Amino acid sequence: MERASECGAGSDARIESWQQFIRRAAPVGWPALCPELRLHLGGASVPLWEAVEQLLGRQVPPPYWAWAWPSGQLLARHLLDHPEWVRGRRVLDFGAGSGLVALAAARGGAAAVTAGEIDPLGREAVRLNAALNGLDVEVTGRDLIGSDEGWDVVVAGDVCYEQPLAQRVGAWLQQLADRGATVLLADQARPHSLSEGLEPLLRQCVPTSRDLEGVEARWVTVARLTGLPRRPPAVPVIPGNDPQHEHAGMPDSRFVDTRSVRV
Ligand SMILES: C[S@@+](CC[C@H](N)C(=O)[O-])C[C@H]1O[C@@H](n2cnc3c(N)ncnc32)[C@H](O)[C@@H]1O
Image (cartoon, rainbow, N blue to C red; front, side, top):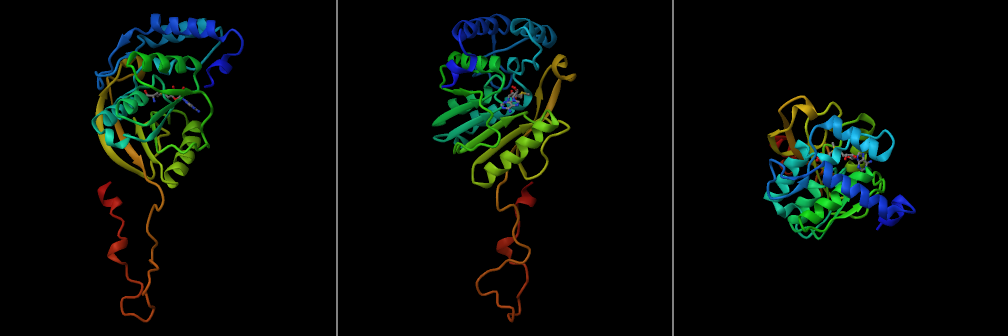
């Protein structure tokens, strides 16, 4: 566990004060799409963000952990409805925020669940949310982009909200999918959303708030990132493909890429 080392000396008192802050500023509620899970949920964004900056004594990114983002909600819903994606498997929830997707994976019977979150306050929120639901989730603040700890399944909700992050995450997740990990992404059509190699599984309009996103609802897509082989060879080399044979070089029906039809 990184917990003792991440804050240095006096970390217990600091973590206690952070947890008190989360309990006070983000009362327990239920995400609209996943009422079976409880979360600490924040209210109006700007006052909460200012309160976090006051608590930490410096400027920080928004407290993403305080809301159940439409993408995370639909991805969590998908795992709750189809636990076979995670049951008995080692799961990473990358960019966990509140940890909602990690909680859904744990509820679905995953063998182990890790929530990766760079925001230290967010990591405390995930711990509190896991405890609220009686679920076991390991939490890490290590920069996991580029690493591979042998996860069977990697899930990520709304992690392409900034261009540099989207680029790094996209390349890394593709590598994981290529080596055989199941990679599930949920995305609400941000300008830098990944667009290639995705096999959509589910699309739905999910309620959000004007305060957070300027609209009442967002369309969200849950998709699987396809790994290698991405497409069949143009001219398949198969035993018996004798250049003298009358069908030599003709596309073989066994190699037709049906994924493009399904998408
Ligand atoms: C928009 S929030 C989505 C949270 C959650 N997945 C959901 O859908 O509700 C994106 C989250 O990714 C986290 N994040 C960004 N870069 C990260 C990185 N390199 N490693 C881990 N988490 C990261 C942010 O701190 C934030 O909590």
